[in-house]
Length: 466
Image (tube, rainbow, N blue to C red):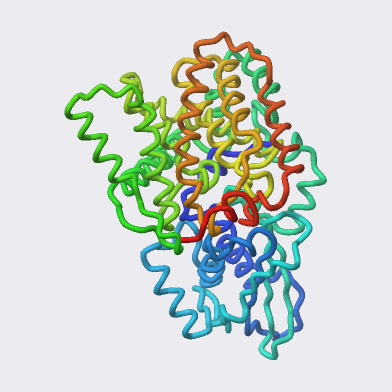
C-alpha cells in the first residue's frame, strides 16, 4: 500500500501524535460530519450539544499526553497544523468557563469539558487501543449522531468503518497506482535490482505520480525546515517541563558545554554521540512541552531521525540539500513498510514501534546518503530495528518525558551505529528486515497491555513519585 512521505512526516504539535494530534484530528473530523448532510436526521433538527469519550490507552494516559486538551481544541475547530500552541491555554480556559465551543462555520454548541468529555478506562473499544467516541445531541438533549474513531499511530486517524475496510484488505491492495508498489522489504530490493534505482529514486518516482517534482522537493524541504527549527528551539529553551514531574530541560545546558569543548578543541572520543544525543533531546523536550514538531514517524519518537540528519550535516562535508531529500525519501520508504506490516503505535506494540521504527528509518536514510546500496540500506534498517525489539512503552505519569526523551537519544546513536556497520559490509546478513518487522508485530501482540502506553507497568510504576 502506498504511503506518502507526507503521511509519515506530518507537522503538528506535541506531546503525542497518537494521543494529541490524533484526537484533535478526530474531533475536527466529527465537526465536519456534524456540518455535513451524510447522516440521517429529522427535518429541522439542530445540534445543540457535543460530547466525547476516550477509551483504552487514551483514557489511561490522556491527561499526561494532552488528549483532553486536544479534543477540546479539535471541537473548537483547530487542527494540528494550524493550532497556535502559545494561544491554546487561553482558548481552553475560555471554553471551560463558557461551557461552549464556537468553531468557525458552525453555530455555538454546548460543551462542558468537565461533563461532556469522559476518560472511560472501563470500556475499551474493539478496533484499537486508542479509541474515541463522539456524540451530537439535539436541542432537547436527544442523541442524534455517534461516531467512533481510532488513532492508529503517527497522527493517523480512521473511522470505525475505515478500520474495518483496512482489516479486510490485503496490505498489497488499494491506494493509488505507482511504478514501484513494494509492500515489504523483499519486494523493495527486487524492484531496486530490476530497475537499477536506489530506494530514494523509487520512492521519488512513486511520489511524483501524486505531485510534480517541484512540489515534492518543496515539501521535503519544509519538513526538514520544521525539524531543524524544532532542534533550534529546543537548544534555546530551559526550565521545567509541564506535567508535574518537574523534569528539567537539559538540551540547552548540554549544548553550551559541548560548544565550549568544541571551541577549546578538547579531545572527545564520544563527540558524535554527544551531538546526536543533544539534538534528539532538544526535539523531544520541545515535544514534551507541547511545541511544534514533525512526526517521525510519531511524536514520541520525533527526535531520533532529525538528530541523525543533523549529525549528517554536522560531520559529513559532502552533505547537501539533495542528500537531505534522499535521506527523507529513503526513511519514508522503510517507515511505510513497517507501518504496513506491523505498527508504529506505542499503544499497539510498545516503544519498539515508535523509537524502534524511527531508528530503523534514520539508519536507512543515513546509510543511503553515505553511499549504501539498497541491500546495505535494508541491512542498516534491520540492525536498528532488531536491537529495539521488545522495548516497552511505559511513560512515567503518562508524560512523554521519562524515559522518552533519553530513549530518542539512544535511538539516534543506534541508528548511526547500524548505518556504519551496514555500509562497511556487503549487504548480506542473516536476519531480513521483513523478519524483524514480523517479529516486532508478534512481540507487540504478546506484550502485556501494562507495557503499551497505559502507564500501568514498567518504569511508570517503579519510579518513586516526586
